[in-house]
View 1 (tube, chains in turn red, brown):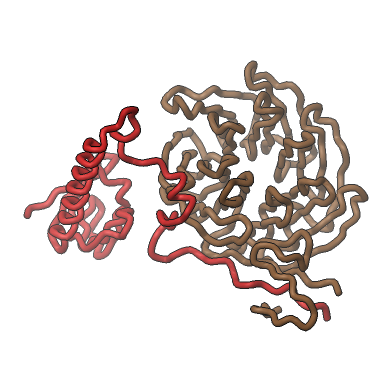
View 2: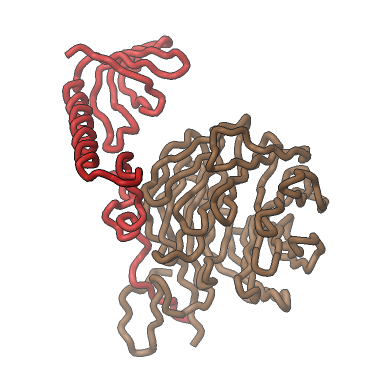
Amino acid sequence: MRPHVSVLRLPRGPDPNGRGFDPNSPRFIALCPTTISASTETGTDSVQIREEQRARSVLRESFLRTLIAMTNKQVQFHMYERVKVEAKFGASDIDVLNFQVSELHTPIGVQKEALLRCQDVISYSFDL
Amino acid sequence: MAMRQTPLTCSGHTRPVVDLAFSGITPYGYFLISACKDGKPMLRQGDTGDWIGTFLGHKGAVWGATLNNEATKAATAAADFTAKVWDAVTGDEVLTLAHKHIVKSVNFTQDSSCLLTGGNDKIIRIYDLNKPEAEPQEITGHTSAIKKALWCNNDTQILSAADDKTVRLWDRNSTEVVKQLSFDMSVSSMEYIPDGEVLVITYGKTIAFYNALSLDMIKTVDAPASIHSASLHPDKDFFVAGGDDFKLYKFDYGTKEELESYKGHFGPVHCVRFSPDGELYASGSEDGTLRLWQTAVGKTYGLWKCVLPGEFSCLMPNN
């Protein structure tokens, strides 16, 4: 019986918790264009970059805090195709792709537990 | 002693894998993208099969996927009536191109400036990625759903295969048909090899090789089973094919002799492609997996290790 070729290990599979594209990989660090718009202009002012980054950090932190504040609150979602639904917000996944909600009131009934696809949401509002 | 092939199984997809494509060789190696009916195309390191990331955004089965040569951009074609362009480094969606029906095929030009799409609305479209809001150039003529549309002849011409049982060669500027091939049955796959201008077409149990410029037939080879996809080795000494009987076949291109057949997949093989360096080939199957196969069985490459008699091996797979 012929022996099988040996392998060092098996190919690594997907990470169940995220979508990958490790920002610490050499390729990412070398190739990833900066997403800060100020720095893509010529004659960049490093103060401008810092200020823009600070603004982005503030906005991002506010957004994350709204997600925390929303937990277990009634939230109204405005979605595409003129859909308006209301539900009790549970949580968001790490990439903000899906919102976990309960008691989702839809035009065709109440769904006890549901996932809302964030791409389909235009805006949402809730009372603090 | 001749060794037995150990395919490397890449898991992660939850539905059939219907298309796959390699990038060119980049300073970071080469990469592989897989299109899957689960709607989540994945990027993998080409020589190891290690998962790098999943492109999230499509709302339906992804029928076609491709990478540009530098593996900096990816494009996908899906049943949600869109083609999407992605940043293949960050995984971010860059562009969504709305179509009027299921999109089946996407292909970048060599310089990544234009994207070719084709699908069930029977129209080939050319998008200028520097002006994405502009209306795409349209090429009409096919009378059935387009399966594959590829740039050829230095991106001056386009090859398309459709369910109308034709393969057509179009001039990009005039959008007219230059030449046409008709078959008795639908073409199941098409591969274009720029170096040497070879076109590999599969239909029924046949793998056919054509000159991509003249569409003159070079040769045909019949396999033991219905073939869904075939790929010619960069050195043009071998080709591999897979289809309905779940096996991968390796043939000598010169003599047309069947050299080997490999079992491994648990479902029909939908796509097979050689890596840009020819050291391995990847297959995608109805069973939801991709498998990597060595061209030279037993050679040390990627995750495969050549173990000489008496040496201690790290991992011996179960049969």
